[in-house]
Image (cartoon, rainbow, N blue to C red; front, side):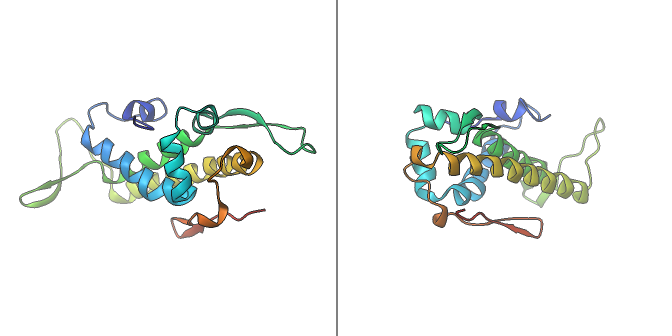
Length: 174
């Protein structure tokens, strides 16, 4: 069972339904290279193994919740881990999606009905989408800190920082 699909991305982003393998590769890369280091390998694998459990459904889809801390009576809301995945996958689709490997090298397909954006513009969109992903991740991280007892393998020290446009982002146990 796929955690996210191209249809999930299309709910939030204007992308072609005909991306096929390029979208699948972008999603796979986003999960393995962006999400897994943020979550930690064991937690990521546990999520994939137990994806149908209620606690993981909430983690993935987001929603309203309350902290497990009895001194915290606020209601919190977050977009969910799927939205983080979507932003990371979209950034990869934008940056790498229009290139094809051919016998003469890497090429971009041009048509008379469209004009490709510059590589600099792709990089701007790529970077902005990754920053958005990290903004959503901050809310997921706060959720996990408030609900850590529900996630056996959530371990702050096992996660790796993610670099977004010259900034090294990580999180610490607070």
